[in-house]
Image (cartoon, rainbow, N blue to C red; front, side, top):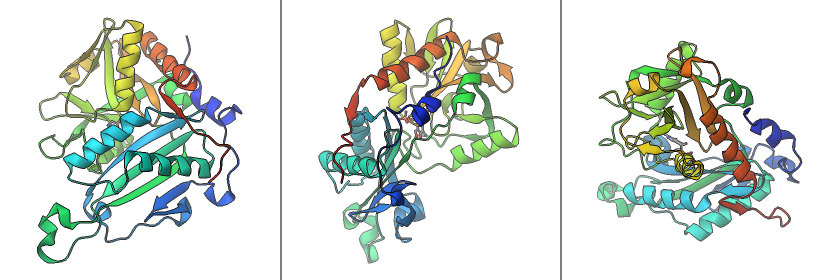
Length: 326
Ligand SMILES: Cc1ncc(COP(=O)(O)O)c(C=O)c1O
C-alpha cells in the first residue's frame, strides 16, 4: 500500500479546489473587532496582550473537500482552554461557528486552515490589571488555504526526526499544554535546532526523558503492533484522538501512557499527528531508521490513508454550503 497523495488531490481534484471568491481574499479572510476583512488588511492593535505577552488561547480546525472536521471537538477544547486561562470568548459556540463558516465561504476554500483566538485584550487602567474581570477579551480569526506540516513527498518518504538536545517542553506546571497556547519558543527553537542539524522536524522530551510533543503535532510510536502515545505534557490533539478512534476501528491496541524516548529509538514505526497535515510518517529518529528500513511502516500507511478516505466521505464532518455567499 502506498501513501495517498493528499496534497496533490487537494490542489487538483475539482471536488477539492477553491470555488468562486473575490480576488481580495486570495491570501485568505479574517475577522477582527467584529469586522470581516481580507487577510492582507487584517491588523491587530499593538497594545493587545495576546501580542505583547502571549496572553491568549487559540484553536485550529481544518476543512477538507468542503467538510469542517470535528468542529464540535475543537469548539469544546477551545472553551476549556479559555476557562483554564480565565479568558472569555465574547462569542457563543454558535456565533463562533457562524464567523468561521462565513470566513471559509469568503475565501472559497474547500481545503482550509481555520484559526481563531481569544486574547486578554488591552491592559486595564491602574490596579485593575490583577483582576481578570477588568479586561475586555478580544476574538480574532482567519482562514487560509490548507497548510501541510509535511507535504506529499515528505509523507511518502517519512520525516527525518531529531530529538531536541537543547530544549525540553515547557512543563505543565508552568503552562498547561492541554490549553492550546502561544508559548511556542521552545517548540520554535527546537525546529531551528533540527534545521541546523539537517533534520526535517524535532520532538521534545520532558525533564525526565519522556516524550511530550513536537512543534504543532503529537507523536505516536508502534512496537510489536501496539500503538503508544504520551498521556501528558502535550496538547490533547484532535488528530491524536482521531488516530485513537481509527486504531480502535482497525482493532489495533493503543496505550496512552508515559513513553520514554528510548522506546522511540526502538520503535518499529512512528508518526506525528496534526490538524495541519493529518498523520505524518516518520522515517528515522536521530538518523536511526525505524523498523530497519526506509519509508513509512505498514500500520502508519493504513492509518494515514484511512484518515483521508474517511474525512473525504464526510466522517465527523460539518459541510460548508458554498452556494450561499456572504
Ligand atoms: C503544541 C501542539 N501539539 C499538538 C498539536 C496537534 O493538535 P491537533 O491534532 O488538534 O491539531 C498542535 C496543533 O497545532 C500543537 O500546536
